Image (cartoon, rainbow, N blue to C red; front, side, top):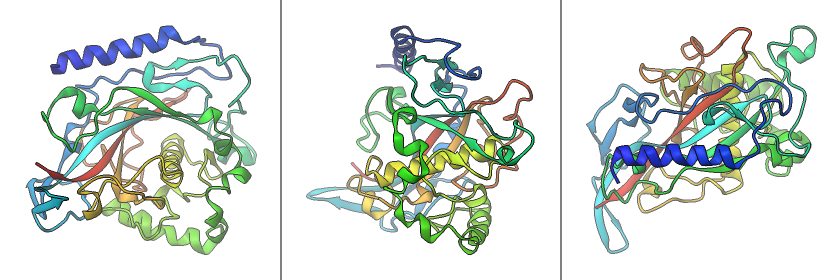
Length: 337
């Protein structure tokens, strides 16, 4: 399949999803905004780099990169190979305060036919009172193995195969909307619900902005706030960019805690994925796809917790209201043939 054919298959799949679902622009509060992701022009292709063999970068980049296995040769069972490290776009994510709003599917809004996932919309646009700094978000998680579709690297066993699919819809997840129920999967949250633990996140903020987040401080989402609770309720919402990136970080952590997402980086990932219930933040980069794709620059695909000072321009649209879309890049270390 050629790259053009892959794009046509993707576009056809999206259209079939739209026409097969009972879409309604008036379903629930708020107007949904968004756009289809162009797999050519809306992707930050420089976010693929650096590419390394062992500890040597064969295609360097000015973007921060976690440590790779030092030795260039590897062995998986009886199969020898070369220890490669690279970044792979594998997921799309909608992050919106409006339920059933599919940002990366052209701003399509569905009417599920039953009252689930609907909550009051609040946030920075609601001026006055404590609710001004509170926001509640939903996330939709898509499979999006772009490099595999485009066949940029042919016959590469390290790439995640598959086709576009909606993997997770937070509206039907009771743990996502209720902080008390969320404690089932993050009981340790009570240990970090104090000013001292939150103040320590300033170090993670500085590290993520300058280079990479501190995986040892797993309860921190850097400059965005706390990883707990692992749901879409943000009690300190400063803006759409900050709050949506915090929610997406929490969602990724939640998937790791539920053993849905696994580890792919480091020496343990050379021969396959491994369990990672405590997510390593250095494994991910988030690139904005909506309302405006971030396709170039140092902060086009920053790590979890980096300051949003250089990411907010062009992502806040007055009056219309923003629904945020993201492309998730994942660090991959692999024993390649």
